[in-house]
Amino acid sequence: MAESLNAKVAALFIEPGCDKNAAKDEKARKKGCSKPLQPGAAAGGCAFDGAKIALQPITDVVHLVHGPLACEGNGWDNRHAASSGPVLYRLGATTDITETDIVMGNGEKRLYRALREIVDRYAPPAIFVYSTCVTALIGDDIDAVCRHATEKFATPCIPINAPGFVGSKNLGNKLAGEALLEHVIGTREPATSTPTDINILGEYNLSGELWQVKPLLEKLGIRLNACITGDARYHEVASAHRARVNMMVCSTALINVARKMEERWGIPYFEGSFYGISDMSDALRNIARLLVARGAATDLLTRTEALIEEEEKRAWSRLEPYRARLAGKRVLLYTGGVKSWSIVSALQEMGMVIVSTSVRKSTDNDKQKVKDLMGGDAHMVDSIPPREMYAQLRRGDADILLSGGRTQFVALKARTPWLDINQERHHAFAGYDGMVTLVRELDASLSNPVWADVRRLAPWEEEEGETDFDDEGVQALMPIA
Image (cartoon, rainbow, N blue to C red; front, side, top):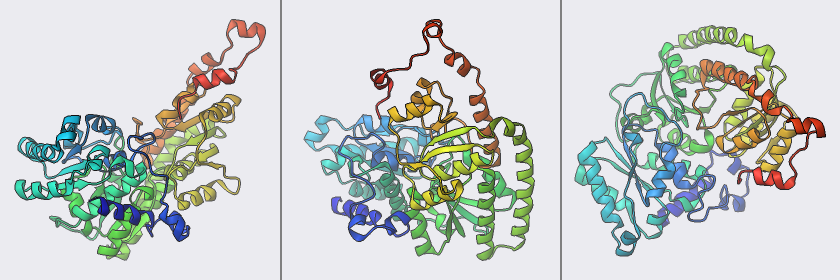
């Protein structure tokens, strides 16, 4: 099992579909995409965390974590991936390995008993079994246990070999994709197939974002065969190989799946975004164009343009009241991956100014798109230390910070508006309706009267002049990076 995992990791480090890897020499590619983590060092997301968040949105299966209780507690329900039906994916299932199990070698027995109990109690269409640092280090063979359980219980038991110590969260995303390719995709034929079937890869239906896009596809007669993995069903993913086109939403996570599906089943793919009006329209155009090229009726192109014109007109009429208030507002965007450029595009459509955008987890293609959107003076950063971010916001370099929850306290201590743009958010920002929601939330945050109150000088500051935090005070207030 260890040799097989090492081979998979090595292959992912030289993934030919990744522009970043293609630009490296052979020696650099072998070093991998990032420094491997140490066992237990889950800060920033380990490989197990990446695999779990990539696959957990498959809603009708049970996700069983083979390891200590804390591993499941760390990864359960951490992305607000919504379901339109089954809720088995929200079941916190773990083998709860203890020190006694490790010493006595009971790990594989506990795993088998857990699989039997899940089948008896829930009868799911499949069970996804995740290895963790502890069970991988002691050598539990989850592949063998899953094979035996699959035969014994007539239920697919899918091993996900992505223990946390093998690398970063992004590597775990790709290892999850490899597990789908090896054990799931192509194992079942769809009940029906049409010339307009598509898959969407790397979309997780965070806060229901997929549901703002799917109705547009249905209006055009385009059938979403499988979303991998947002609001997905096991049988949909298993029959994903019969789709005509793949749309890749987040290439840093599942580019290996898109490339191998093209090689094995001849399914072309393109990378697109659902954030912003122009990007949403371009996504619909590309889907229609590729479907027509693969045999769909040619009138799909005309109907797509008509729908785009109608939706854009409706969206801009709803956005117009916000344009004057948001134009010229400066944004510090601290995110990564596809959002590093797709959110830039959305904000620029409202006349907002991007002070800088982080490009953590972004591919070279993502970075090039940022340059194309922001011009030659594009300010891209890999990461910003909390002290420096605080100083920028305190100086007033930006009017608002858009980031994930871990950096919100930097903005709040700098008395600067903040909006959650990461996976923990509670609002859906995809599609035309999502753009309206994003702009409305931006306006609400910027115009909140609380900022005038917290920036007002205290009586003793008015008398003596405002004093800022000294270095020690700033350091004490900063969250751990």
